[in-house]
View 1 (cartoon, rainbow, N blue to C red):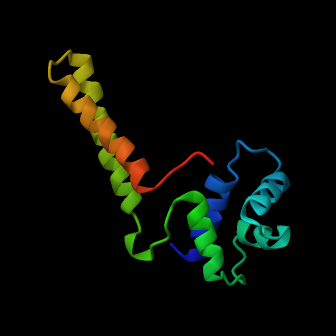
View 2 (cartoon, rainbow, N blue to C red):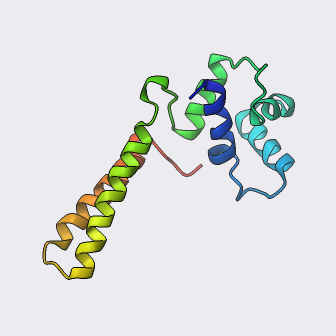
Length: 126
């Protein structure tokens, strides 16, 4: 994933998610105010204009605000963790349906993995 794609995705889903507003302009203004960027700079990044040259300080600002670090060498790492968490949660649900006595151990393992993913990403309510 390129830096621009990372920033664009972060703007859309983490900085100004659809729950902010259904109006795209309002979401861009919200993101601009949260990051301290101009509206035009935020809009350029929002739409992923290939002519934009991201500054390191802008990338760090996004990382700091979202708690997600851009690392081009770890592409797909989050998807692997999510798949592991989904597998653990599915196993816990299957055990719950069976009424297995070992349910609690699997449930706790799944919940721990789920919460650990948030901790590793330093996700916080902003």
